[in-house]
Image (cartoon, rainbow, N blue to C red; front, side, top):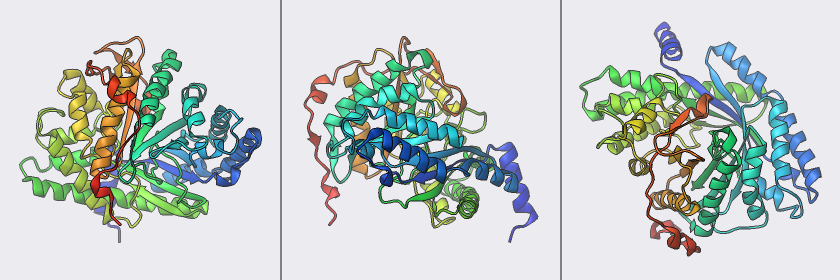
Length: 452
């Protein structure tokens, strides 16, 4: 039973603390669009997406008005496109990217994810062609996002894929150098990718998912920060309890919106992803939550411990609020999308090595990090391998979005705008890992992967 206090509290969260539904994402299976003729496949893809998601944006807007809750983005995720490319080996995969873009334009969504390949144990038909087409596909589309899964706890790390993706990331930056190197900002390299993630750029619709479903991504860093600031001297276990209770309230809102969207669209309700996803807006920063716990600045000693507490408390609060919790769920630390992270990076408090340590306890990984434009593909591959190793050994999802800033050096800025924000060019290690990367092969799965 809602009471006046609950209603007023929610209004305050929305108006003053940046509480929002970050995304409603419709997942759509394209398995029935597979065709040996690439042009026919593209027509089927366009028709399937536009028929299924025809009312997605309008539904989101109606829910916004009905409940007074901002829904920032409406998005679509689809079956990994490499599976469609496998059926037409003579076709150009970029045609699929253009079909996805046309569908995104027709539906009016902000992003469409799923120009993806899953190669954690090796390359199958269609994978290499699609991966090699990613720089061109991202350069020639505006709303299409790509992802590649190169490792998992059960299979180990495909180091041939890591080596290839280092080249692809650099090529994607070169192909969009005239647009602030936006290409790799739409490309995620995963270890342990999940099938029901509603957040871009890594969203794709897994083969184990139903034909169509609706996911909700909730975000409320500002709400969590405001809650902990009311307890400036509380012990950390009490602070964790405050965060849990706050995450519960945030997730209940996502559950409400997801259930309503499911009914209106006539598709199953997938999951609520309760990740704390920051934006460049003032007051909407995960870094500022950590600083609210008592750190002088994010990145200083103690940051990893504070982030571990935050991530765990968010998950515990969220799972009590919904039986549909999934996706990534926890705390994101994208540098360019978080005002506090940007400030810490500019001050030199937050470095790449500290971010890597933080990824062992947060939801994802090295996200939206701008690096010097002269970085070598082998160094990119080594960073991808490091992050995949953290995910593999810790049995968690990790991901990397690195943006080589072509023509820029340490301390310069890239300006993306919107939710992608702006990022300072961060320093990287200059000693080579080229020999290690060139060995190729596969890093075997850890011992604890054997669970049967």
